[in-house]
Image (cartoon, rainbow, N blue to C red; front, side, top):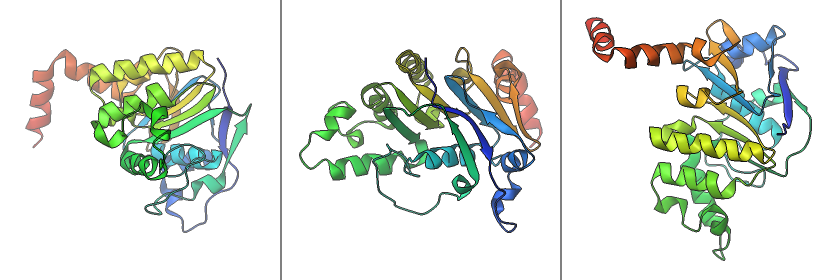
Length: 244
């Protein structure tokens, strides 16, 4: 097993007027905190608005990936929506991967379109399973990408991959992550899925309004909520609906 990024920290604070300073994750880093990513799998989990996807994106862009996703060779842009946080962080690198990919659910359609656009001789698509990613369901195309394009010795950054996947497909994803780790790969993943968080040996960081804290996955709020819901869904539904 091999890792390529050892840690992430802030080299300078964004400008005073930047909205980034309001993100709990940025505040944590600005106060001297750092993210240790030396495990083969690092998980970012937390509520919306705490900065986990923003930080994940910054790591990807700082490493050289296209902000909308893809490999380091992908050069397209449909909208300038990514933050400038990548300019403010330092990645402590251990080695350089031979492969890599930034996979984000919200812009995967754009990645699939770009692959079709540049595949003029119809040979590139073979690396993605031989079928256009647009000709498959969202979940099927996600798995096709991971099973065929991710070849090992790589850094793979995934932003909420469970968004396209059924529970059964998430289990397939977990098996693929293990395959790739055994082939000297590293993963950094932002997720809401307790299933993905349970990956053996993963380092889990929970993002909250108070900052970032490393936790065992069973200690995370996501796990506790899901556990309580599945243990007694009727009671949990009553609690939720009685608040209306």
